[in-house]
Length: 166
Image (cartoon, rainbow, N blue to C red; front, side):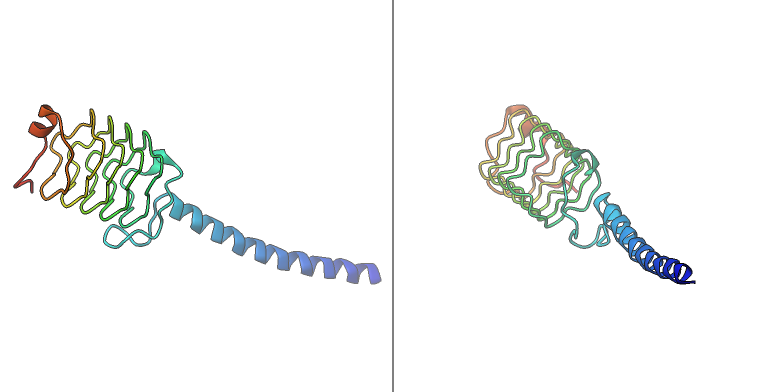
């Protein structure tokens, strides 16, 4: 009889652990969904998830108002990402795909954008002081109201949009 009681006690303890384990698993799944870009703030509000550790999974993400200063995002896929008012100062974005990205009001001071694809990106009101844009594709990029735009090549100047870009 004592053995049966001991076994029942063990089962009760395991059931309690299973409940705790189930809750922990649900929390882990919620965190994983958030890291995969299922951002609860949605496209309207500032981002609540500024994790950019997976450079290949950043396309279309809401990273508005994120502090990404000084990060290495070389070759990152940021196509159509929302980077409004993000701090990208000193970030390394060489060969990054920022085509169609919204960089309105972003801080791009001293950012390295060599070879980056900024085709159709919105850089209106962005601060580009000291940014390196050598060989960056600025075709159709909106630079209306951008501040401290560095010297561009003749083709970059011609391909970018400077006014009435809407």
